[in-house]
Length: 79
Image (cartoon, rainbow, N blue to C red; front, side):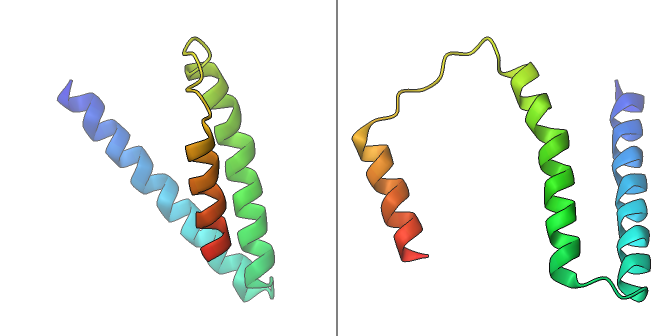
């Protein structure tokens, strides 16, 4: 079990180095910061959205009450 945890930590650090290297190379060639952030967020969405559907497909959705909608509206309005 400890070897699996170490392998996961190592792979996360390896992926972090890859992302840092790619982002540094893209910025050095003249890519705009906002464009890079948009591409990275789009890539993360395309990767994480199917994973959430796979892992949470058997759980029922929590009820969406008026209180939650009001909290979301107020939070969005204040920001």
